[in-house]
Image 1 (spheres, rainbow, N blue to C red):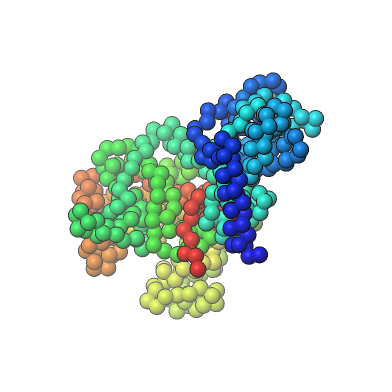
Image 2 (cartoon, helix red, strand yellow; image 1 turned 90 degrees about the horizontal axis):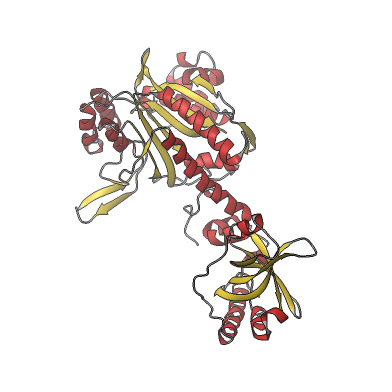
Length: 480
């Protein structure tokens, strides 16, 4: 029998059970149910003889002659039920035996401990809250097919308690980030996700059309230019924890829709952000996960501070030789070929160097490392280093070979900012955000700014190898 045919047969049997239940006075899709507590709390406050009401999905059931045992789960824990014919009565007991795995029920009864020392509800009455017409996967032994897990996240959460726990941890991390920043005087704000100019980062945007104004708009690739407007306006410390969208590839560490935290601190700089992210990440590790060492991508990551700091040029020389920056473009391109790094036609020496860095050096940085003093042309929104205008006062935080966070001493010179925008736009004036430049001309104080890829940070803290594991509904290729 094919899988589809078997599925249809199981569904038909469940529909027949549903019809019999309804005939017996148990409607298939019931009303709200007032429970005493969630199941994890019933366990933690367990008291023999206590009268309780509990509800959840049947995840195991064993039917005998005049008795049945079942386990229900509500996402917080599992709890055993004991059902006896002489307590329920003939009709209610017969109806109970028509229930299937996956059905959602509510029960009322008394708590007791079985001979096997398991907390149990001795059921006095029950009600059907929702009939499951399709069976749980693999008889509830776990949904293991990766593609199915991502496409049917509801079944993944039902079948795999560790997945449920991971996403609860995600919620806790998001909440604790807000608590951490709020306690330090930062204000959470919201900026537009639909923008007429896609700015704040170099990436390909998603494009749409706004009918009411008859203009093209873009899903934002970053909130940076709007958050800086707020700094100009006098909001001293701001952050936004929200979605960015980039119309680019899918891989183990990239999803086109991702969660990002951006933070700006007036009268601060890159060092302000450096201290902040070390404090925040270690706080999350200790508060939520209770540890400072994490297994990720086959490595053990030690988050204890201080984290290593190394200038970009020094790191490049460590890997490519002390004479690297004395080489010609042809020599650099030849080295790239030896390292199997693809170089686009027309790249200059700095671009070739960064391509080699990106493909062969960054991935070797396993322990937390701040890469500082990057070439100015790579970071058009950052302030030059005071001792070398060819470099910018920034860091890139690399952990486990992946970029977790960039931070800048923000460029607040509107004349230099316009020059960099024009270079980046390559003659296309429509790509220059004139409103932002006008705001900057009213004066922006020295500012530290930082972005943090929350999904990648969660990958690290939960030991996940793929970004799709930490996003409830990741983007996937269409079926077929």
